[in-house]
Image: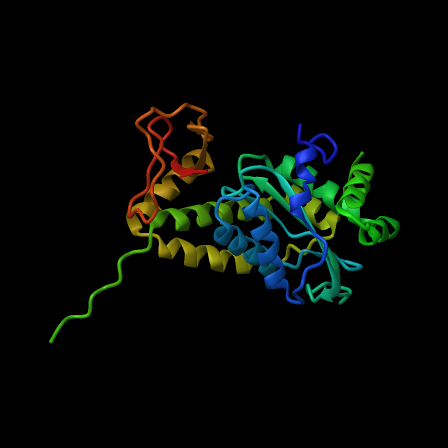
Length: 157
Length: 123
C-alpha cells in the first residue's frame, strides 16, 4: 500500500520546504526544488531528475490552475518518495490553462520501483491537498513550516 | 597536418538512466487508465509526440552496443535499469557479492547485475 502523507512523516520534512522562491521563472524554480531534494539525500542525480521534469513540462504543463502547480516524476534517481513544498509569493508563469501565475508548488517524487498506481496515489494526495480554495489559502497563509505541515497532514488524513 | 581528434564518448550510465526514466514516463502516458487518472488530477498529458522526440534523441546518444543491451533488457523486464541500495539489486532483490563496487564515475561501460542482468545504478 502506498504511504500517505500522514503515515510517512518523512514525506513532510522541514528541510524540504521553501517558504519563498526568489525566482519568477519555471525552470529556475524547478532547479531550486530539485536542488533542495538533492541536498537532503532524496535524489542521487539532480541534473538527470531536473531534465526529466523539464521533459514532463514539455509534454504538458503540471499547473492545475488557481495558482497551483504539482510537478512530478517517478525516477531511478529518486531514492525515496518525497514531497517538496514551495511558495512563490511573486507568482511564476507555469503555462496554466487559466493563465494564473503559480504561487504554490508541490513537487512529488517517487522512486522508479514504485508502481504507477502507488505513484498516482501519492500524486493524488498532493493534488487533493491543494485543490480546494480554502486549503490553498491555508497552505499559503501558513506562517511557519510547522503550520504548513499540520495543514498537509490534516488534509491527507 | 594533424587530424582532428574525436571527442570521447559520453559515459553511458547517465544516458541509460535518463532513457529508463523517459520510458517510465512514456509507459505511463500510453496507458489509457493512467492518462485518465492524470487528466482527472488536472494535468495536461497531450504532448506525447514531444516525449517521443526526446526519447529518440536520448536513445541515439547511446553507443549502439549499449542501446542494444538496454532495449533487450527493457523488452525482457520492462525496466532495464535497476537501482542498487544497501548492496541489493532493486530489480531482482539479490544481495550483490562483496566484490561488487559502486563505479567511481566517468566509466565508459555499464555494469550489470550478475543475477538478473539489469543495468545497475548505485544510489
